[in-house]
Length: 115
Image 1 (cartoon, rainbow, N blue to C red):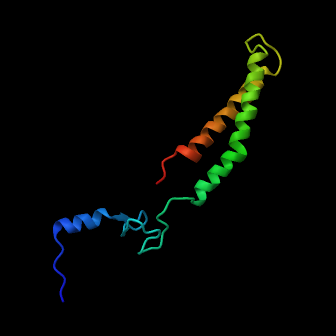
Image 2 (image 1 turned 45 degrees about the vertical axis):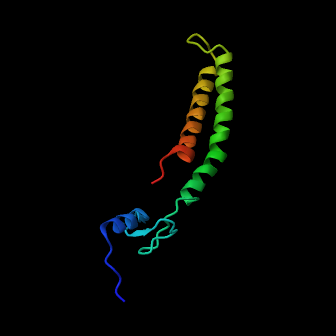
Image 3 (image 1 turned 90 degrees about the vertical axis):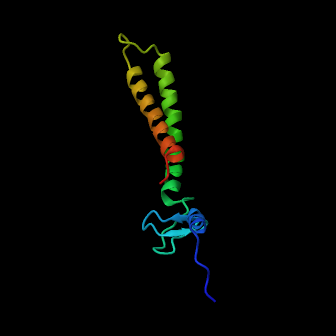
């Protein structure tokens, strides 16, 4: 038996249920984990880069915030100013760099747009 021809509405509904592969553009089923044409991973969960960024955040980002915050507090509480001598200026700069590293890694690990 011959199948009846697909109408325009059925074709557009079928297209809406597919996910194009970012590498080759082949349409795949909406729940397909891999591309049927090139085999690329279509699910973006737990990719290597995402896991690496979260681990980097935990190993570098959190200590940077803790050390940077402490050094910034020490620098400010020791009377940081233009006439102040000592290490308070260095503490402030290192502290702010630590806080900036924490902010950058937080953005990369949790808030960047995934392609």
